[in-house]
Image 1 (tube, rainbow, N blue to C red):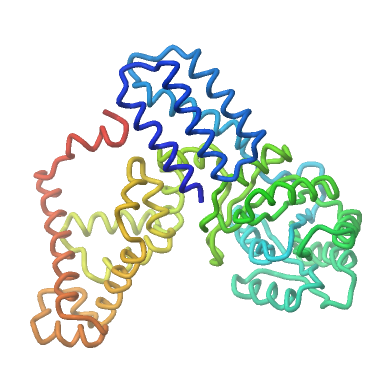
Image 2: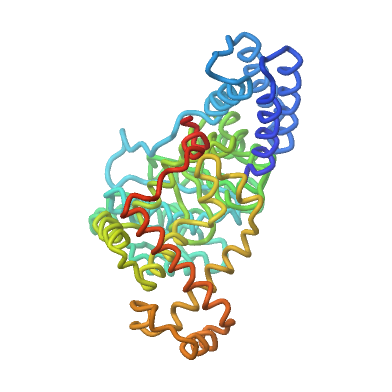
Length: 446
């Protein structure tokens, strides 16, 4: 998401970076490019006009700091205005609500509400809450079964009464069941339709009336484009939404809907959902998303993901092993798997300042394929071979190649990569490896 917007804005800033000062012509040029980039990204016209006007006024009236190049100054202004447009970070608000708190998930059919309900429940459990999933979708075939299956997969309590009971009654009954089981939040997975209609809104209004939800969150497909803005407006007018959850943000969406929906409805984006995996869910941070759009990275989210996958004690133990030159192929495999669990490699590169453009030079599918090959090769080794790579003579390498369905040259490459890493660790231990002088500059610290 936001890929074309990012490319256009970054190219514009690069051109300005070659200028010694900022002229009115430069401002006009960058505003034209910003306008085109936002429109191509599916941001609605009124929001584009407002955004461009604010950036232009600041760029023309700004005193260019001596320490900043014109391109950096414009980037700073665009970044700040992008954050302002995306709005304040929205968090779940249970004030004024009694336990068990109800969260209604609403949206059209096909936006991923049921999967999102499970992801949200896992997030709440991680935050110390005791959530319960409730199957209020009695319209879509197998919706109840899907929710029950997902709840069992992640060991979450759930409530369902099949499809023969009115959704509003199911929701009301779930509050009593949650109180009896000690759950403090119920997540109501409501039905959707192919389009907004009176039946859908009547059902949602009835559920709202019986449960007095603390939050009504619209689950919106980020790939819907401009139509998502009309959908958001429709739900807000009929039911009154308190926040947005954007799904499929890792797809090929242009991304403008996220900017437009926030500005049109006035309600905050609270979460972003990626893919079908339960762990593909994150709290929305406007400043971090703005930084990603402009190629400035998102180190904080990267650190948070790493902390979820890497235990602090294990990380310290790994560091000590690497410095003692005891980093085995088994540990190499385990850490490779942890990194892959953090998300697609292209997405991780985007979070590192200055590395976003590197992914354009790298074939993402090729990279993933290479990592799968490494995993297959190491898994084809015996435990002893993984801990003592020196045992890997020619006959053993042939056997490993056959077992992994690859070539001996592939096995040789993995062994060589592991050897090079250990060599690098030895150099670090002896103090021979120094930080390249260009790195602080590339990280914006030079």
